[in-house]
Structures are given as structure tokens and as C-alpha cells.
Image (tube, rainbow, N blue to C red; front, top):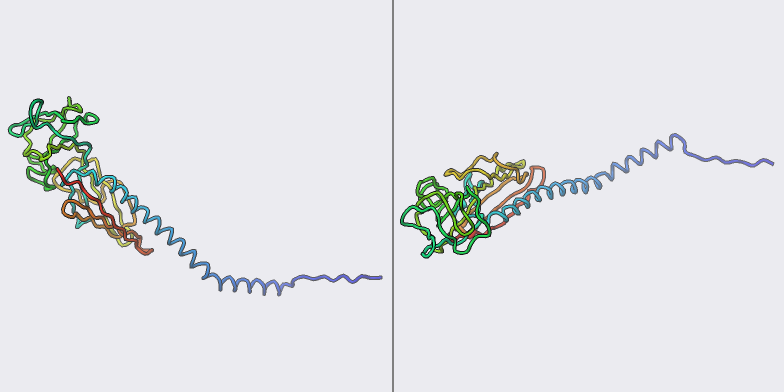
Length: 263
């Protein structure tokens, strides 16, 4: 007795037809997969650029509140901001007994009413009664005039007594306040349609002219389409950044930073 053995399989033609049909189906479905994938890539890029801008806001939020009163100044049509950071502050002695700060003649030391936490470093500066951010005049810490409101701390300074290069300060502070300050800090923005930069520039000497070279300093954020610093009544800095790189929808961001404005 013979058993019939049935064999089954795909012919070459059937295999080719199946491959063609699969390819056509893949092509037809490709847009449904491509769009979500493209959206995911764009979303990741948008998030990355926005994160850079957020880090810039965080850095500004740490530093701007330490600005010396009336030291914020803005240039570059609103794209450059500069200020002088305060390292420490306290009250000077205005009356005897003790070593008072003399405003009638040149002086080189004064007692601190409540001692600082630590002696300020030699080479830092003290500022008294800063009323302006002008490049000249006796009431501005940026002024290069011989009679300005800034003095350089010298050796022998302690937490309870400040010693400085002999000078006559122009005017007393209504609160007997003095500020120990460091070197200025600038935020320099170079916006561009395809994504510009925001840089932080520090460690330079106090100067009458505000830095406006946007290539200076360390890169803080990239992908900056537009930026604007606005000083409102010397008490509030508004910062507007628009992040993007030309290939994605731009992301506008806005924040405000309140300043201490009592010299």
C-alpha cells in the first residue's frame, strides 16, 4: 500500500508578491510613524534649548539680587547687562568713641559697628552711598574720578575694622551702610535667527565703559533667537529670552528679578 505524501510551500512568484505587498503597506504606513518620530525629535531639541535658557535664568536669579544698589546698567539696545556684585555689607561707625569714618577729610580706616563674619580680602573694594551707574561723577562706583564712592581695601583689615587706601568719600550713607564688592559681572547676548548665544563675562576690572563685546566670557546658553534686559525704576530687572534654532518653534521665556535699592 502506498501513502500519498503531499508537499506544500511558496513559489517564487508568491514570495515576490508578498514582498511587494509588504513594501507597499510599509510605504503607506510610513507617514503615520514618521510624523510622531519627527515630533519627538523636535520636542527633544526644543526641550534642550529651553533648558539652556532656564539655566541662564537660574544663574541670573542667584547673582542679580547681590547687585550693588544702583549698579545695574544696560547697553547693546537691551542685550547687554552689567552690575557690581556685593560680597558683604555692614554699618560703619559714624560717631566717636571709636574709629569713625571721616567725611570732612581724607581717612584710611573705620570701625565696623557689628563685625563681619570674616575679614574682607585685600584688593576688594568698599562702596559708600552709591546713587548712580554713570561713568563719571562722585556718586557712581563705575566712575574713574578721583573723588568717587569706591575705595580699595588694604592689608591690616579685620572683621571689625576696615582699612583702605586713604581717600575722602563724597557723601555719607543715610543708613551708615558700606558694601564690600567684587569685580563687575556682565551678561552679553548675541541673538540670531538660527540661534545666538548668551555669555557671562566676569573677572575684569571696574571700568567706565560697559563691556559690549558679545564674544567675551563663558557660554551660558545657546539657541537664543532674541533677548532683552530692561531696568524698571532701578528696582526691577525684567529678562526676556526667546529660545530656538530656526528649525523649531521658538520658546519665549520671561522672568523678573527684584533689586535692593537702598545704598
